[in-house]
Image (cartoon, rainbow, N blue to C red):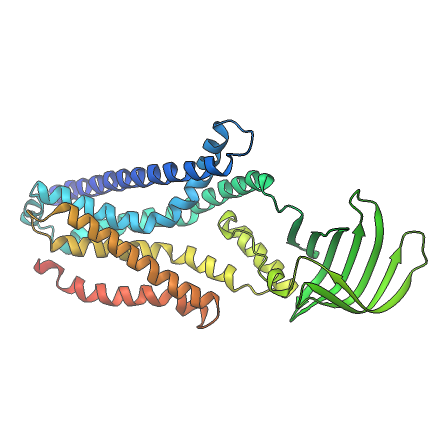
Length: 362
């Protein structure tokens, strides 16, 4: 009997993995097709070969697929149960002592294993591809004259105005002020024009105000000036939202960026939220898989399968928007960040716990 149970365990595991791979390939194909049209449209005015948007689509698709994976788990569980219900195999499982709860346990272990791989290995792989995707695509954007990056040496901004190219470095940002700032100005041919050093600059508006500045100009003796203004393309709001596309950073790079932002005085809420989403990914995947399984135990053999799949997709969309809503209010600091990420999953867990108590009665 124990040998037979092990055979059934392997059978359930094998068939679930087949369903998971099939659903993943279906969604990957949809992502690829939709994304390639977007890339072709982006490059319609550029002289590039058709292979170029094809390669970019390949680089970008894994990152999009990662976001869809929790719902792939739900739908793949549904596909698995549709197959065994059609073949009336649930009855055979029960004859050999496999309860509904035991079947869900096998699926639970499978989903846990797969979700951990996706969360900590596939995510980093997709992030590296996403970085390459953005690196290539950014070369074709039209706004490269306004650039900003954060390094160990603080904030760096390249700002091109009508007459000047300004290279700006600040040690940190505090309230509406940049601290320990240097601004080097060049003409359009990159010939040196001036250098400004200031303890702080008010950047609340696009017209930056400097109360006390040390100024050096070409062929002139350095001097001090007060209450001068510089027109730029940046203000505090823009500067304070200079996040990289976080999906293009591995977990290690996210922690490094968080340290850089802390040293600069930037808010790290969005980075922390993104990291918590990564860490909560396995929990969300398990909850959605269990939700799909519990729902399928209530499905009768002659039930409409298309309705079942549609219902699964609908549930996926609802769960996505609930999580997105809480994520948004957490990032906007209208509620503490940790509850905003974990509260929707805690509610799902409580609901599913009550359902699991009666799952063997189905």
